Amino acid sequence: MEIADIRREYSLKTLDISEVNPCPIEQFKLWFEEALNSKVLEANAMNLATINQNGRPNSRIVLLKGVDSGFVFYTNYKSTKGKEMDSNPYVSVTFHWAELERQVRIIGKVDKVSEKESDEYFFSRPYASQVGAWVSPQSSRIESRDFLEHNEKDLQSKFTPDTIIRPKHWGGYRISPLEIEFWQGRPSRLHDRIVYNKTNDDKWTINRLAP
Image 1 (cartoon, rainbow, N blue to C red):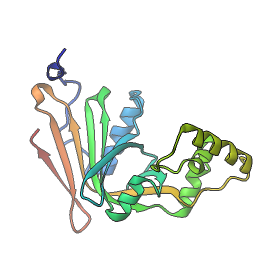
Image 2: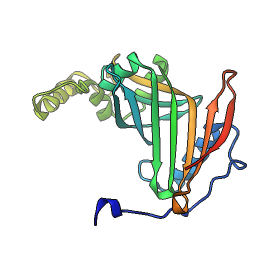
Image 3: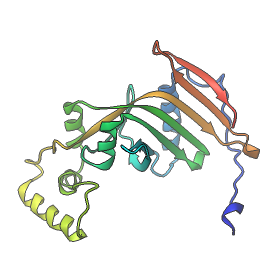
Image 4: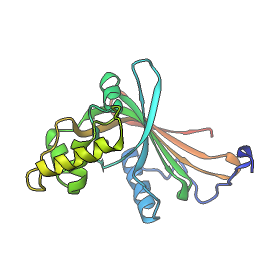
């Protein structure tokens, strides 16, 4: 089969502007809960796009770890994405839930979560993941996997589950949304797209977009 011939018709659901929640975060929670209940694989996986210092886009998959006033995820602050967010705090994330023929696109500004929040999440993780946050100099060039494995053994001898602490270079970010679009696949590529835009007085406008 030719790549151009790959095609799927979408017909599972509809999305009408009269039915969405006035708050996009509450609407996201509804869709996210449905994704979880539908056993969507890695429902919290989102593509995070940042901009580097040369103005070039960069993206990767990260995992959503909380939804409150914004969208929270955790990473190494010294990683490529951490450095890019330091220089340009505006990001975009996209969730793709193929099983429900849905996407959610979010544009917003990132800020680091509090040290308390980062500590609470870090200590909720399995011990192996806690050690992993220390082991990897994320995004740095390394000679081989042996470097990681030796580093892991050294750190396991240094830290026990009772003595390990959160590395200062590891923690969370919260994306405060400025725009959120909900996309529902429809037949004939005439998809439903509902977009929320934040106004200067912290309210939301809601509009339908052409597919």
